[in-house]
Each structure stands twice: as C-alpha cells, then as structure tokens.
Amino acid sequence: MFYNFDHRKYCYLDMFPKIKKRNWTNKKINKAPIWVSEDLRDGNQSIIEPMNVEQKKNLWTLLINIGIKEIMVGFPSACKADFDFVRWLIRNKQIPEDVTIAVLVQARKHLIKRTFESLIGINKAIIHFYNSTSPIQRDRVFKTNKEGIISIAAEGANYILEETKKYPEVSWILEYTPESFSSTEIDFSLNICEVVLEIWGQNIKTLNKVILNLPTTVDIAGPHVYADQIEFFCKNISKRDKVIISIHTHNDRGSAVSAAELAILAGAERVEGTLLGNGERTGNMDLITFAMNLYSQGVDPKIDLSCPEDLIKIVASCTKIPIHPRHPWIGELVYTAFSGSHQDAIRKSLKKQKTNEIWKVAYLPIDPQDLGRNYKSVVRLNSQSGKSGMAFLLERDYKIKLPRWMMIELAPLVQKESDKNMLELSSSDVYQILKNNFFLENPFNLFKYIFNITKTSFKIYINNINKIIYLKNKNIKDKNIILKFLTNWNLHSMKLRKIYIQKINNYYIAFINIIINEKQLSGIAIDIDKFSVFLKSILSAINKYYLLARSYFLSG
Image (cartoon, rainbow, N blue to C red; front, top):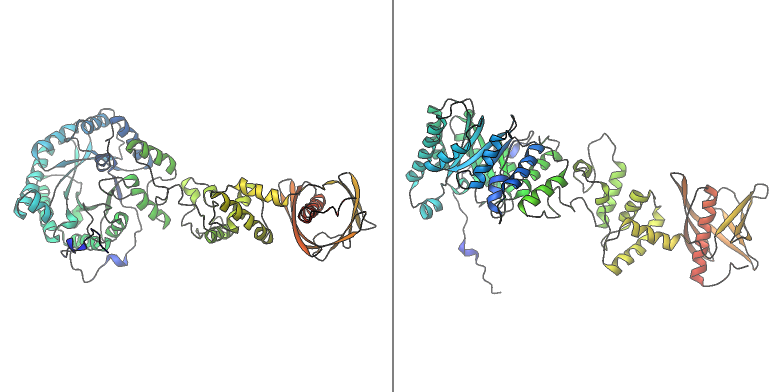
C-alpha cells in the first residue's frame, strides 16, 4: 500500500517524570473542583466570528445562572470588545458578590497596565498571566534559553506586583501559567513557578492563595502521563499549602476530560474549561461532561445542569457552533436506543426500577428526566429495532401492555414497514400497524349481546343479524374453553388458546388468540364493557380468518 502517511516523522517525547509509586491510581473524586469558565476567552478566540458584546452578555448570564463562580472574561489588553465588556460588567454592577472574574494577559508591561485599567472599580479579580516554556517555544519561537524564559516570567510577575500596589482596595488573586506545561521538562516547570512564587510571596500582602495553572496547551501524551506530571509537581512545589493547583486541558488527543479527571486525582483543585468543549484546535475540556461524570457517580457537581436545552441554545447562538447529537450526556440522541436488545434491557430495567432506590437501568447511566428529558426520547424505532422497542412505545404513549405472544406477532409487521420505508417509526405508526392488522371490525361486528345464564350461552347480533356463540364454560379466562359459532350452514369449532384483558382508564382492551380449522388467529378489541370487548376480539379474529380464507363461511 502506498500513501502519504509516514509515522517516522514523529517520536515519543520521553521527558516525563518517572514515578515509581503513584498515589492518584488509588484515589477517587468525592467533591467537585473549582470550576472556571473559559468560554468568553479561550472559547471566544477560537470561533470564526468572535462574539460581540451582546453575545458575551448572554453567555455571561448563562454562566451565572448555572452557578459558575470563577469566569475568565477575556483578554482586555488585546481587543476593544474584551475591554468594553469588562467595563460593562463593572460599571453596571453585573458581577455577583460570590463570583470572581479573571482576565488574561501576557508577561509584557504595557499589556499588564492596560489590563489593570480595564478593572478600575472592581472589588476582587484574578490577574492571570503566562509565558511559554517548552523546548520548541524556547528554541524556535523566542530563540532563547531557559534563563531567558525565566527572565520573562520574573519581569511579568514584578510588573503585576507594581500594578496591584496602585489599587490597594482591591482583593487581587494572582495566577501564573507556564503556558506549554505539558511539553515542558518537569524540573523546569517547577523552577520557573518557584521564581514567580518567590516574587509574589515576599512582596504582596494578601490572604488569597496564588494559583498555578498547569495546562496541556497541546495534548501530546496519554492522560495518565499528565496525571504523573501533576502529582510530581504537587509533591515537589514549595509552599504547597499556599497555592492552588489549576489545570487547563485541551482535546488534541480526545482525552481532555480524562486528563482533567486524572489530574484532580493527582492533586489539582481547580479546572478551567468551556461549556460543550469549545476552544482552539479540537477544543477545551468540556465542563458539562466532567460535571455530569461526577453527578453520575453520586457527587454533587455544584452547578445546575437540569436544563441542557436552554444551555445548548444559548451557547450555539453565541458561538455559531451546533452540538453533535451524540455529545456526551446532553446530545439529542444520547438517551435513545434503536437496538432491539438495548430496548429490551431498558424496558425491563425501567419496570423494576423503584422510586427511592439507587438508579440501576441498563444502558442509561443516569435518569434522563434529571436533565429535563422525558422517556419519549429513550426508545425509537427503525429497522434495527425489535419487539421490546415497539412494546415500549405502545405502553408509553397508549398505555397498552402487549402480551408477549402478541409482541411476537406484531414484530415482523413493524419490521416490514420499517424496512420498506427505511425511516424511523413513531408510536402512532406502530399503533396504526397494530390496528390495521388486529382491530378488524369488518365484515362482521358486534351490534349487541344477550347473556342467558341458564343456558350458559350468549346471544349476539352481528350486523343486526341473529347469531349465537355457545360457551362450554362461561369463565372467559379459562384457556380450555370451547367456542361454537353457529351459522346457517354449519357449526364452526373454535378453540381459545390465549386471552389477555387489560383495563386502561375507563376502557378495556382484549387480546385473543383462537384456532379455527387448525389455523391460529389473533384479534384485538377495545370497549367499555368487559364481556363486550371479549366478544369483539373474537369477532376480530374471525374477520381476519374470513379475509385470509377469502370465503363467506360466516354469511347467513
């Protein structure tokens, strides 16, 4: 095979910490981390048409409403839209007391000054500055050595310190990111963070902890490697009790959420991400997915995700990016089963699920109703579906509980219809198939009946013509009952094989299976009278026999 796909261009970057005994592998997450939304910054800079101020306002309101307490609002030194939005937040008192905004800035003096100007009038804010640290950035972008990179970080830390002193009334929280942490030598990451800590620790008077943010700016290894990096960093950074370890994972390898979860196990306390995973390249870590992962394990995520449709609508309108129907937890088709075996397992599990017990339903890790989804989306029918799916739909929307033998008879008819049109079938489609094949009221239907107890017979009028059905036993649930249908020509014997009568509100529905001339036939009827529905179901089966035989054996 010849193709332009050469793996020899790449290699495994063997510069990660060697941990002989890992602690994170034996831990579990038992509380929510500090959530930080990056939607208005990282998410915004990644879209083709960046959000205007009005769109940012809408997204801001959503973030507040679902309970995010730390929000990165932008890069105010980089563009007027971000600067104006920060000013709008402050001037219009849009920041709740329990919410802290963050702003991002590079380690450059004039940008730092402009950033502080955007925050005039704020009570509390996070100043987040960064510079890149990886060998590639050092060698090919900045063309300097480790000492040069440390110098950039130190100057930035000092610039920020000078500006904070101009606004002593503000509670400043300082955050530093070695921007390419995931591809930087771990000892160098530790070294440069120690330098920044030393500058801030000796000169700033604050009760707030310093935040050290350690990102997978580009995700270059498995999530277990990132967890090793975080654990090694947490064990070796000085003043560990004075800092908050934050993470910011990207999805280059499709493992942003996994990397974040393992990093929390490894000692991190704070998670930066975006709603639905929007962000540069393949995106940021999806805060919703991580939060729902916790929720599904019995951990309170501390944010409200009970109305995902509203969330999806707002995020999509602001970013112009639609959500995939299979998006984890909140995609349109996430709680939908087309597979017959899946439908059967879901239907049976739901029947056994008790109100106050731990959720245990096959193929549904959480109750869809927790996210405002009803069970109409759980089971849908196509050519891949089976008996349980159609039974589920009929029970859900029509309260009809099919007996198993009727499910077996109905299934191939539903399958045939689905195969013919290659389309999804609704519950009304299934009901129509059931009605067309088993609710047969012609050519003969019940006009009325007379119950004669002494003769144990039932006199009925079919199409207003006197006919008689004789019962050897008047117990209609007796499977050994023998039915005799008298016509002017002869006496037809019918043996009752199965009967199932169900009450739905004020009505009865009867399913019957009989044998006429060695042929099995099923019929269904609905009526307000229990015995009437029994007789009508018999006539439905007789009508089916009549139509199949194409004879007039019932004519009188």
